[in-house]
Image (cartoon, rainbow, N blue to C red; front, side, top):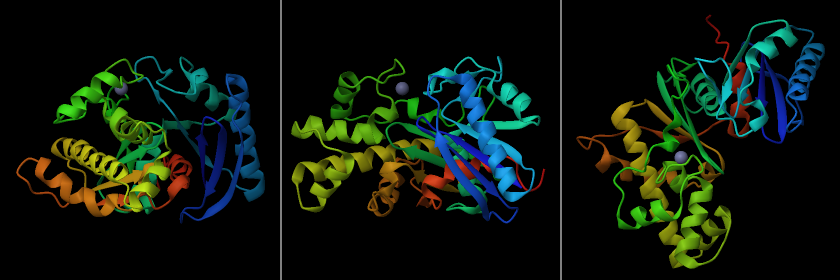
Length: 303
Ligand SMILES: [Zn+2]
């Protein structure tokens, strides 16, 4: 049995999966914010519940909104900031009395979708979470690729490629929280989409409200979504020119915008070197469950 934990900012979720991928148990508890020891205790409680309910012992994988530094062994870049600087895998392994695998939540999405999701069986998968922010992860042969610095997939903090004049202005007006300007995240996150519409119209609306207006023929909302599609396409072409994944999977709030799957593939093509590109762009099959399922699959079937 495989146990996956998704450590989110507000809730911590557990799933227990059989070898077939069938869900045996699932439960969630509030994340004890700003309390490192209680965060570990919450995970221990969820693992214990999963094992009691199923009567089996499981391997444990955990998805976190950050990554482990391969140099210090400590958590970095977590927006659940109380994890930063902590030897989270070692502390959790000691508490659970077993080895624990930890990965970034976007890497968990990539693994989940590569194992039995929208990219099932694909060799190389690039998965993007486009929500409040923009995270991405890479799975190769169904396994998480974290890279030598633990930074693989952090493409959201590369600059938007091939910026036009308006994007050059956006770059200056909307700096990224990471301290740099022009990051892909500032353009293609749900927050970036709403910001762009606000700059066009002077109105502050949520992403789904902007989409509803575009569907009713609102010209500025239509312009915002067309600009968004072009920016997403340029950003993905950048990935294809480096990694050329077999499948690109989109998760997070903006991945629910259905027209992206019709419009973006054709917009990607002209930006790919040589102009040939048939890379499938698919919506995550497991939706919000992908993170917790991918955490469980950090222990693959073939060890
Ligand atoms: Zn950034």
